[in-house]
Image 1 (cartoon, rainbow, N blue to C red):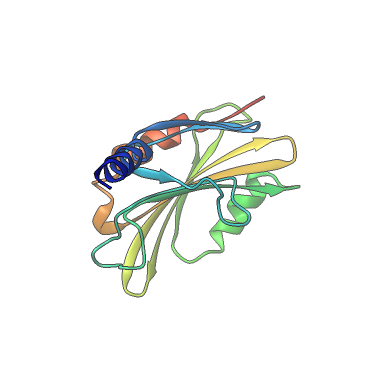
Image 2 (image 1 turned 120 degrees about the horizontal axis):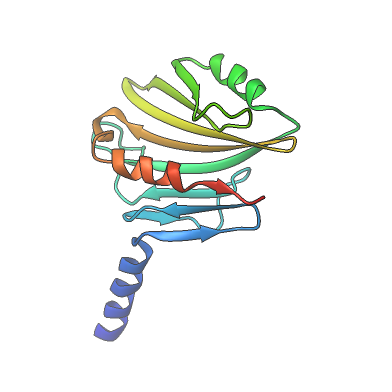
Length: 158
């Protein structure tokens, strides 16, 4: 029994280590402390989140990251759609290149709790890939570095 418990603890610890995730379409580094969901929810290509829930939002993880794709769209169309959502704050290209990824910031309130959402949009052909990183406001400072790392590591394969 003790042997099984030790193996389970080691497996759990490994699951929370930083991990490079590679697919046929993209690569990304899951930050330490996040759980990589092997079979993401419908419509998602990638899903990772912290094991801990936020204090002020007991149904929300302290941080969560997802990747989804929008077919037959442009970054401009996706940004326009995001602007319609409540709490739209800003969007900006990451650089001056015509095919530059675009970063979008959205602050929204759900059940009296403010959430910060950072979105990175990357265009490939007629598909827009969307990396989304969500944190309740109370956890934003704690996961600032993890959010930056996951954002910088997300790349499409050409």
